[in-house]
Length: 125
Image (tube, rainbow, N blue to C red; front, side):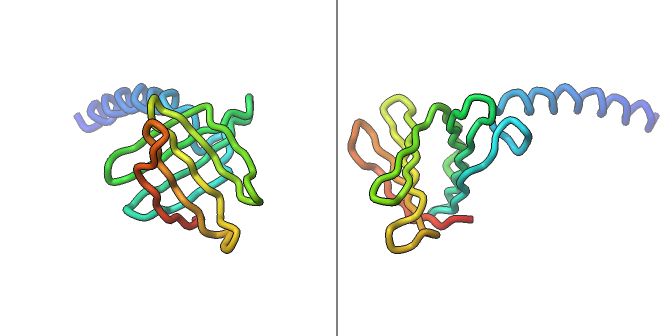
């Protein structure tokens, strides 16, 4: 009986793991490499990834309010500080990689219809 239960559990686990691996475009595997990892105020963890095949920037955030995955980001250097920008409908997410005073610090800014909603201090992890 135990052997039958183990086999049934294995048969269920394999399809679930396949679905999970294909549902997220960026994960800790060979398809993308992490280029920035930050921990922000209020429990926000932000990771910026670069897809190896096409160079696309990917945004992955976890927080007490839920998780968010965005593709198609842009990157630009502004006065010596790099900013990554991602759009989701009327929202924009800007992740600043450091500040002029402290390269290990950063900021998460969230805009809605070009008006700032949130600005959180972050540190590289």
